[in-house]
Length: 304
Length: 155
Image (cartoon, rainbow over all chains, first blue to last red; front, side, top):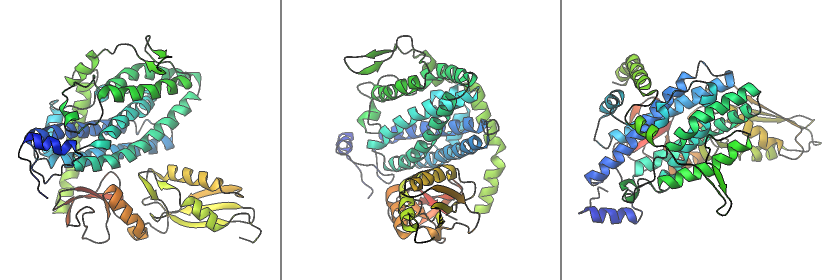
């Protein structure tokens, strides 16, 4: 194959006509960088998410939940593994460099992993609200992503994330049908996680968003965010929980939920590694990487 | 099973065949070789015996639940019992040719038959990069030609 394009314009025409870029193609540098940054952040988020999940293995209430948490941890670390391989193949940073930057607080991961999950209710809120938000975004990327290897990996990731969401829905149902103590624990988790989950989609997309222009993403942030809001407001209310938004209202004319103004300051803080739990999360991830170095060394020896 | 039964093994088998692997939507667990045995007693109580790809597989609960649901939906069935067996051990040989094709085509997933693993996309040779993928039953390979990152189902 080894296709190349003589200008950014012909490349963009290729993308606009539904063209899929493969690793062997001579893609424009700016595109290569944009795809890399996007996949690196996704990989980092899967790794940080997997580590959060792992923290709950010893604390999950009951054997069935413990198995689910182990399964999700394994899946998410596995997703990170696949994504880091696709990212490293773009030859902008090696995998070691990506790990180094993550542990130095120099590269991004999703805002939700800058907060601490304090109770099992938080963990369930993450499995329900956050995993669904991530899935909504990933489905939109998958639908029309111009970078072939990422699109194909996303297909597998989405199938597994759908399986995770089933666990989230089951757990919420259990809590919703539980005791008053369980219900009030979950209400306080919703209060803490509603806005971070909603902010995961990011501020409204700018008109000149390169990720959209190059078909790395296929839908605008505000469209995805709204899709999630329209689904989760009635779901949570249906279970008898309240949404921590005093301005939330039902727009009868348009037949849709409208939320109050979004405060973007918390999101900005997480992007600057200044979230409530950023420092601890990063240092724990780094420590866990170092502690497991003997496993990687042993595997390399077996391989050679 | 006697001739007085309201249901047949075939009906149960057809129902189970509609249950897909939760991580590979569209690929039946029967084609992946997980179904080992179906029994029906004279009271139309059904026993379904399955073997896991590996005993710690996180999807066991969901698969059993899905099977119970579809078998319960077969007319005449009074009771369903789904059991996971420890033997025989699952191997990739149990995957049907059709499932292998679907895995390659729809999920870019290869199946490890011998040392040589071909890229599902371009049929070139691949190199194993990691013995473990997102699951114990999968390793990760990289294609030498098109550089695809490939999950490989293995024993």
